[in-house]
Length: 331
Image 1 (spheres, rainbow, N blue to C red):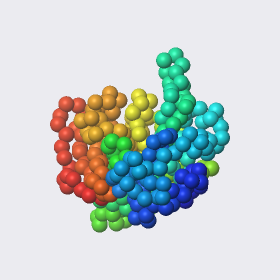
Image 2 (image 1 turned 90 degrees about the vertical axis):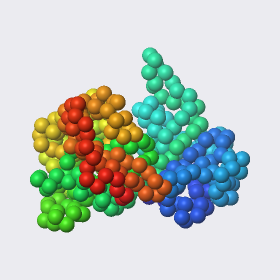
Image 3 (image 1 turned 180 degrees about the vertical axis):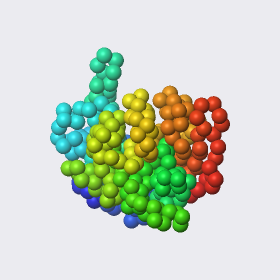
Image 4 (image 1 turned 30 degrees about the horizontal axis):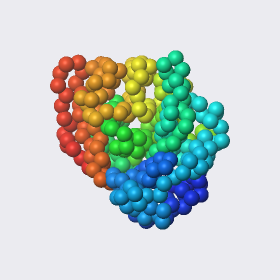
């Protein structure tokens, strides 16, 4: 996965990344490129600056400083030399490149009627490395298993950015699609048909419609499709037994999740939030929780290279939520 990304970077930037120690490359999470400021990387839950010879330093003064020419070349490469073709991505502030890697952008916003139309004078890039971690969901699945239906419960995974939500979601999809259930009592449970709406091309990282990541043999992916429309399309045409979507939050997303619930199809989704209470602060998600659309909420946290989770059973309306047995786990 990293080799494909490095081919996209300007040669001098790719050379600096390749010069990093193997242990750092294995845990590489972010590459932050800021014009005229030190090159920074995130790895194994920490951060460091990269020197001109590829060493790591805590001193920003020692860091390699990308110039305007390098940043312009990086922008040309990630937009395939066409800013116009990437107008929608620039409006949202990020571009997803082959391999599922998301590149966040910062610069001067272009406004139209008070709304953001796009970006110009882009001088900062956050390259987030997408990684496939098989087995990431093995310790979580027993807590969200629907033993009556021999499947999984409708579950919302919440965490701040860069905590492993998409990685966890992807591995749940893969496990359910293979029928590789980790619980002893689940031997004999069938593999399930899974429908994935991959609006940002991060879950399956499709190239020409074919997933790059292993999302299982019984998984159908709608790539680069808005979540609400995609969930309805899959419900109508692909007879899924589980739906999966990343980063819900819009009212139309909630309508599609309700339709799935009425059809008896569980949904695994993610959302940006610090925890259940923060999630309830978002009107759309609060309504879904109050309506009982999700039987479980998973709160994720990073502790260095590991991920800690807590499973909460949200009770509809005003009753207090309860903690699932097992509380905090490391996966």
